[in-house]
Amino acid sequence: MLKINQKVVDEIYRHAVKESPLEACGYLAGSDNTVFKNYAMTNIDKSTDHFTMDINEQFMVIKKAKNEGLKIIAVYHSHPNSPARLSEEDRRLANDPGISYVIVSIAENKLDIKSFKLKNRIFKEEKLKIIAGNAEYDSAKRNRRRVAGICAATARIRELK
Ligand SMILES: [Zn+2]
Image (cartoon, rainbow, N blue to C red; front, side):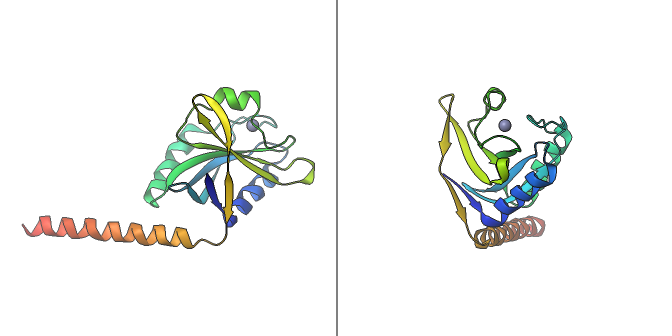
């Protein structure tokens, strides 16, 4: 199951609408199976039916997420003119069983979002739960501060030795 913060879902829809009629793409970051943040990426294909991410931007965003104490847990892209289903090309290009593939559709003025995951080389739709607020993101931030505190303390002890 993938859980996504309502605020993030709204951001993804906004991104999809903004890029339409071109496909929008990006990363979803969080911890465990819960998404707290989206990173809008450039679709260098500038296409209405496929996308490619910019490799330098990918490195930058992965680093940024790491610095914010978050992990990349999904890739998302929009289908401006088709349903929230994996296309043949999506299936061909997606090959990482460790992440979720989220598709948002804004076709026919309807909003839809679905998530898929590779299991034994077969794509399965996974349950997607939209959660309210960002309390869990705050707790992730607190946890990160705590870890940073421990690291600083360890360094200080090393200094004193
Ligand atoms: Zn697609």
